[in-house]
Amino acid sequence: MQVGLAMAVIIAAVAGWLLGSFAADVPGLGVAMEAARLLFLGALKLIVGPLIFFSLISGILRLRQAKQMRRLGVITLLYYLGTTAIAITIGLLVVTLWHPWTGSPTLVESGGLANVTATSAAGATLIDPQASGIAEVLLGLLKRTLTNPVTALAELNILAIVANALLIGLAGLASLPANSPLITLVHHATDLVYRIAGWAVMLVPVGVLGIAFNMSATIDTALIGQLALFMLVVFAATALHGLLVLPLLAGLLTRFGPLKFLTAVASPALVALTTSSSAATLPVSLQTATSKMGVDSSIASFVLPLGATINMDGTALFEGIAAVFLAYLFGISLGPAGVFVVFFVAMVASIGAPGIPSGSMAGMQVVLLAVGIPLEAIGLLLLIERPLDTFRTAVNVEGDLLATLVAQRFAGTRE
Ligand code: ASP
Image (cartoon, rainbow, N blue to C red; front, side, top):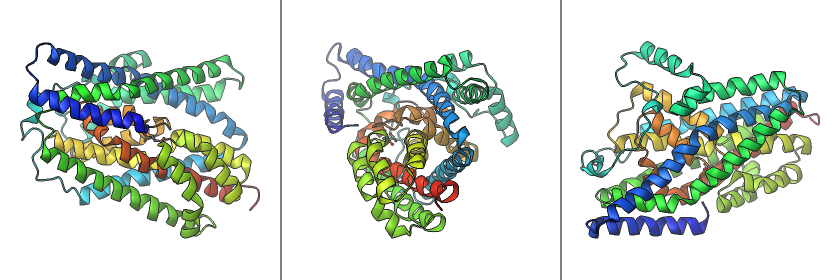
């Protein structure tokens, strides 16, 4: 989210809150605010299914390149999946051990929810609240997964969307020739969907205006305090991953010591911090990898673009903590099955998120829907999205750069 947009969001939040608190009775205002709210949430909901569907298929089809470099492809993917899993685990561990908002009133207790008109998609919740026992939960998940792509997209059944995208992508890898027009079509469709997602992000101020109006009764000092604590926890966990775990992994897996690694990634991390976009940072990352870190350019030019779209440690970690925090606020108890769903869906959502400012917001919505948190929760996250996006993007880029060193070490020809 760029600075101008971030300012607009803050202004919209304050305006929505003021209008909701002092002018709620003005005729027609409530309807207009409801329209603003639905416009944004509707746009997000409209794009999220195709976004996940096409970006996953297109990501898998890009792996074709890796076929020629099998070892590089396998190592890069293992690294990406492994470190993303570590990042979510850190996020979920930190938030399990440290959740300073517990004890303060949830939106249900403060009566705030009375004012919130929940927008959720009936078919999207992954856990059946009636299910007793893990076997029943797993059977339910299996049933939801085995749905055809048309129904899955129509019902916003994320699990089936992901399963279908994986199947189609893998089948395409196995059967389509490299110059197949179908592959070009999928890449073009993905560009198109990304563009629409970008437009949806531009609607954020409109949405925040409506959501803040709708929630004005709940945006009180207690909630601001809870949001500040949430930010603190996210920053701490992100710092733990970026300043300790990744540098230590660098020390263990590559010839770079932790400090040397941190110094080398400093400038791309700064660019990521200011642009909030892994994709926009790509040119700097490529240059750093090849000229500062001595990575082969053939390796860097495969690992980094792939990483900018599928490897997002900071994002995955953030989504895990955000889900737990918002579940608390909305009075939803996650339980072990819920945490498992958050882990799995946050992993997929971070892989499917584009490396653009606030790219993870659509995916975040999937995480919320999966555990039954109303979409309005996104409105709360958007209020603090700007500072959070900067740091998580820096860690996303740091993870991609470590991947180049790992790939060079284990799949390179120079060592
Ligand atoms: N802005 C992030 C990136 O580009 C994506 C996100 O988490 O929103 O890496």
